[in-house]
Image (tube, rainbow, N blue to C red; front, side, top):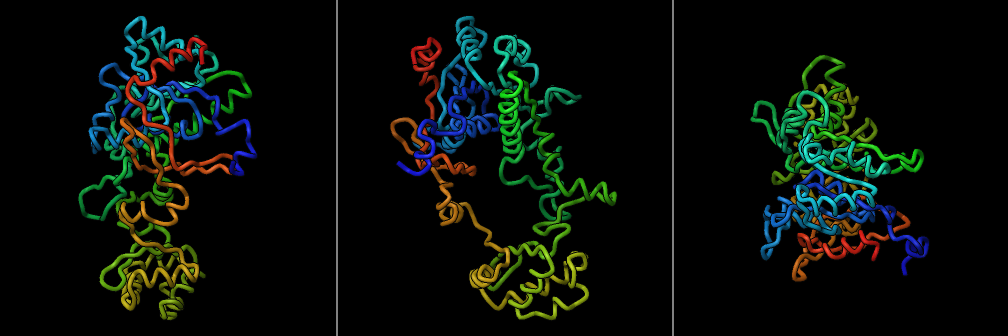
Length: 394
């Protein structure tokens, strides 16, 4: 038995005992509920009979099983219910009455048309936390519009900041619109669970993908309101910290430098054997470096030609300069730091097929973080166990 288990002999996870009814599909909602499952909640995934979650049909596939679905649905149970069928509705409402959280990511109004909206379900279970993730939220002039990640990134401003000036807009390479909505939704659910401990009441958590994109624009919005200038794409560099960008070393290899203050810059110049740059009035302060970033980056790249990127990174890391390589995905999943933090885990699919996927970045001192996660659910594969649970048999 490990140390974490000894500290918590009666508890295995922080959300042990929390029951989640998961009506979500594709990405934003399933990622939210997966994170709840990662923290120990019992997540019952309600899927469409015969079809299941749309993501089951998205590639890539391994022996006919979706790696996409596997990566965001591990550790859940599955039951197939037609919410328009009276018998299935009865099962669903029994689940709701025993649940702590219900999560859905339908278009606003869908649950109300089924007579299963927040007001109805709150009447069935006053302690229920109802988490709704949608493109534009449950209020406002755009509430009825459909949205996917690309729409959220475009309308939320992040695409206007990504890429290089003068080139066509660029989508961030991961589904940032969905994932940020999932994580803000997760924060809302956890806050609501805490609030319920004080008030005894559940609440509705309404999270919009567009809102979340606005929330993560951070300094772009601050800069706009400060000087009235509309920020645009500037490649890898930071708009107000310099040097803070990707730079080429010997053989055209890139590395990134994130030098956030004047003392770090002086140390960098010493390591590059370019102390003259630190004393040059054009580069003496962060403000002047940012104003003269083009000439500074030319000087730094000229100095970096003396060694390979790997050699520079080794030297910089030994001397406390924030830096790193630009890793591809293979390099990420083989990185010793990533592996030591248990950020690559496994979960079993059908016929014992093992999938590898990213782990949970939240580490708890008092709870284990196992390499092998609970299985990926088969559509409707847990029906009997769930029905037994509803009847109080398990």
